[in-house]
Length: 122
Image (cartoon, rainbow, N blue to C red):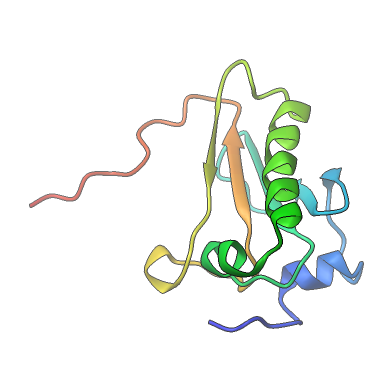
């Protein structure tokens, strides 16, 4: 998967599409998912052009990496999720069903989220 400058998250970063912003700093933007899968479902994206976690950890600067992960923590705190807990998920590549070629982390919370993955039979 290569980076597509017209992906939905790139367009949100450029202000071409609206979002319900939760947090923003120099390195990241966090906003509510338009199709939430939990009572709280927020996406955190870096402001740089990174396809996925592999691309990001290989090519981003130390400041970008630290800033992005701090933004994830600050977003969870801003959402009031620290006490009850939350889940962080990033799909990377085809087998993980990554849909948008821009690194994004999902933050889920606001309820008991159950097991991380369903066990496969056999």
